Length: 418
Image 1 (spheres, rainbow, N blue to C red):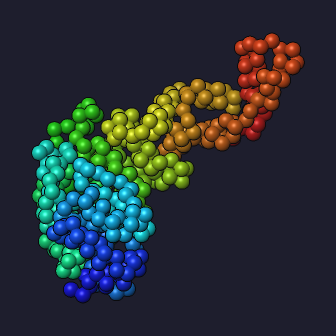
Image 2 (cartoon, rainbow, N blue to C red):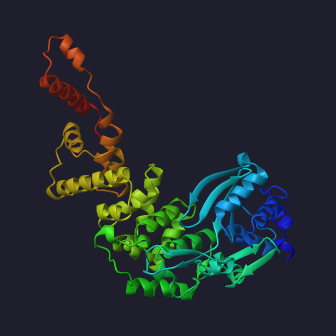
């Protein structure tokens, strides 16, 4: 088909240098790789272009799949093009994938593989396979297509081209969500990004599988025992979704299909979740941190998703702050507090600025006091230093620290409070 001719692809995707696909193919043939194909977003974009000539292809990277070892193939590319033009960025031996930069273009190269899930939700067993079998293991019909570079042929086993035309995507298998529940997150992200609908069968599979909860681990169990697709891979997919340009629609899709139940019931039902994460993003807080903080048990979910230490400390500090503020609100203890009293008590909590911002984003009833401390009182320093006091005849000791604090608090109270 002329559309999938190598020279035509290079004309449609102007970022690809003329002749690069032929070089890529010839390098594969030189090391006896029996088949090499383009997969991923480029294939979808070319199909969209074939149906609408006004469609603009936005190129980010090139995804290649080969029937052979990636390491052998990359060495041949470096031999043909020169090592300085083919730089390896990442190499995953377990999943037989590599990320390289070729002539300034990001290229993901993967060995065709077959995956089997001995235990639902856990990492699959990976074996080398053919391109057709690799396409069969994939998540959605719109992603299960490839352009074979040897004969310029579109491989489309699951009517992905029709799905693109109809703007409706579906899972490939009845057990797709059972095997890997993070596919629910990906489905919502792709649906928002491409403006596609999920098929009725896909929506039913999501609902039925989550309601049955076929995995051996349940929310509330020991986080260390959570299967990979309900912890590590889940974190990765949530990060991708929340950082995506269309994250708002993706998160909305997740709530509509009930997909957030695999993360947390409170997140599933929070009607202000998107608003709170939006405010957090504007405040330079990582969206995943804000997302986790809005869950039923933030510290538990942070551990389950293997958040980094800084993220955990922000969440733990916000939880301490929230508990303290709830007690103040319930007992009206703060009614006659001066700015210095607020400052003293808030600083005892030992929470960082991001922890305060999380509570402000949550629209805490005492948020105006939090904002006053964060943007005003916190930044006021004592007008006198330890050296000044010693110069005046003070003896070194704890009294100096007490006086410095007293002077600072006096200045805070003299400042306009709210």
